[in-house]
Image (cartoon, rainbow, N blue to C red; front, side, top):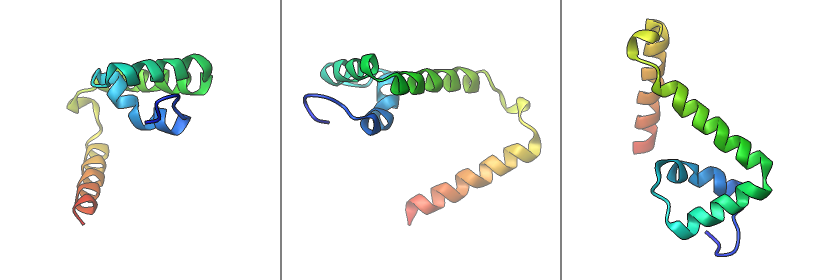
Length: 84
């Protein structure tokens, strides 16, 4: 990360570090400064928070069995591809 400012692409790439609290203090300050001047990234952060909140409220029984199997297949395919 550059020492002076972050790009929108960098914000997207490190948003999970920000949300889970694992970001170094100096990077957190740069991240928050970017949010003050970039409404698009601020909206993206809000969307990520909403997604986390909503998906955290789901349980396995909430999923249609066919949708559950489709998701599991996608994750298996993704994991196989990551090993190549």
